[in-house]
Amino acid sequence: MYRLAERFAEAGLGITAHAGEVSTANIAAAARMPGLTRIGHGIHAATDPELLRLLVDRGVTLECALTCNDYFGVLPETEEHPLLRLVEAGVAVTLATDNPVQLSTTIEREYAVAANLGISGEQLAGFTRDAIRAAFTSDERRSAMLAELALAERAEGAPAP
Image (cartoon, rainbow, N blue to C red; front, side, top):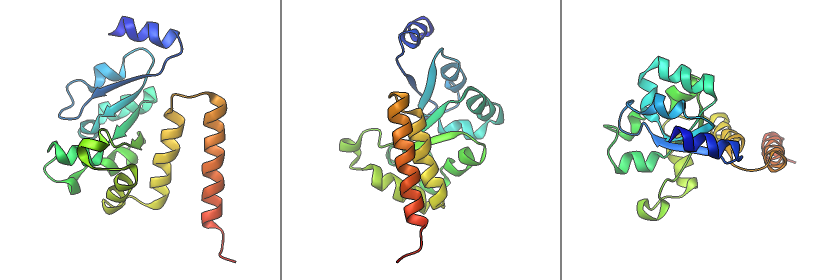
């Protein structure tokens, strides 16, 4: 996979891996993959300070799918989700639906679940910002989306007329 990842990254393709949903066993290997910028799940990194540092140092974004984690029972309780620990450690985090049809979820529901876990509005906006930064798109499109988000945040913070 490393050789393929190198070739894909050299061709300008984004690299993401599914790792760390049920344990920490494969997170470090995935994070060290050439060109990798995103890991689907990876939530168990929150239990290992070295893994957290590795993710931050390599600029890896974790795609957290809260409903999926609950559905597959990867955590004892959704309330014990390490989402806040990941954020506090400085890991870039996005919210994801993983398989919205099978799991009957939407991205809006994932944000609501995160809010119920105690994630602040500012942190929720940070998830969106991290998602845009990690998006497999052009620099121009990424800049436009970040500008649009900043505009929406300013409008939301403005006093009512």
